[in-house]
Image (cartoon, rainbow, N blue to C red; front, side, top):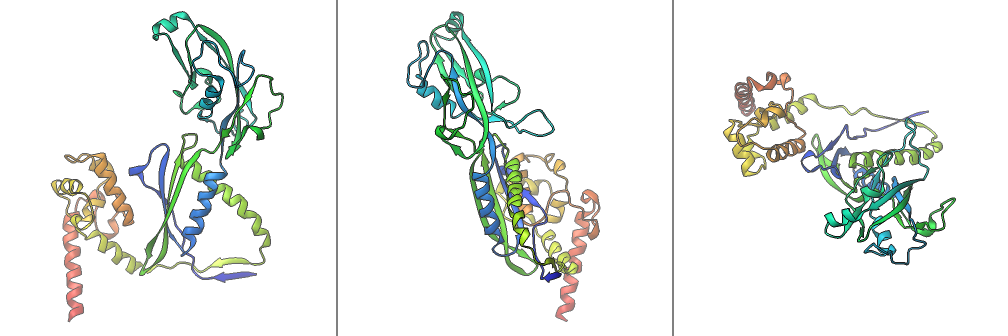
Length: 371
């Protein structure tokens, strides 16, 4: 039986705030959600992001000739305990897939650390061994290659074995299951989670005349083993996978009433935005001055210009561009918009004249209503 429900508003797309995005941080914005859905979805994604994503991590370390972690090492400034603590901060990246030979099985990475007297003389009597020196290039990408592991003060030649595996969350050394463990292999605690911080905010947003809808802002910070976009994508797929089991309780299929839009109301709302002057929106003084120097007076003139052309304006930099793009995104607008439906030619060649005509038409309509 097909059961019909009322209209269900949901976001058509997700926006990434480019002005603040970095390789390890991103702010995602989705709107509009029905009331309460912003908190429900934001909180669920936050918990999954922090607890349920996988990444590679170091399970154990073996340094040739060192039987356990509670001893000093001749020719190395740090004792084995401090070296193990340094290894805990190692970050490796690899996405295992069925299309490649990469698997999720734990593997041992072997390297030879060799320091000669000449090396010591060239470096003032000590050589710092970093993560890139003990993790060979190949399967894993080293996210923090300059992580200091230990300092060599005498000529030495030792083999270093690092066992790398995949997991979730934080796993203490006692919980690691390592088959064929070597006698002098030191098992360490491992922080697998690649997501370090997640914040979400729910704000009111407008659909037509109704302002009682949710706007979800999700901030994701990672440690470099995953990008924020990868982390959000994986968390979403994990959520869908878990929700799917509840579909077994389905008694009836649902259909939702189509969300119909008043095209005239939409056009009027768009026109209201386009006819605003640039000094009527909250831009910084620098950005406003740059637009004034470029002769851009209205939002219609602004959004008709492609992003590439904006950077050609005098004194106009990337920071001002990002600010303007973020402000336009808040207004559901963007640079380089197609406004041919309003009689504005591509790239706004006739935009100033058309804006004057539209303002005059609006004035005439208002005068008629008064009569």
